[in-house]
Image (tube, rainbow, N blue to C red; front, side, top):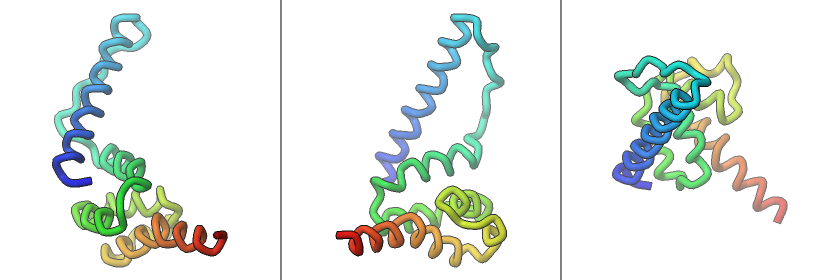
Length: 113
């Protein structure tokens, strides 16, 4: 997945969220939420984690370098890392995320086959 495709997916997600808010407002179940000016880091992390299965290891590594240290710590927790290790250096986090998300799973698949 290249940057252009990623931006398009993020745009679609934003549109779906806006449509959901409008529908809930129409049926009266929820007051419209305050509009955010910036996409929060947690949204970026959630979208990245959801797309891990479709990304190649190289694409994943390139995208991981774009995240800040806090976001990498959050991603590390999401893929099964421990909370105590999320403050380790950025390079270490990237290596462990790649291992937990891709290499560990692929290694186990080859053993089972």
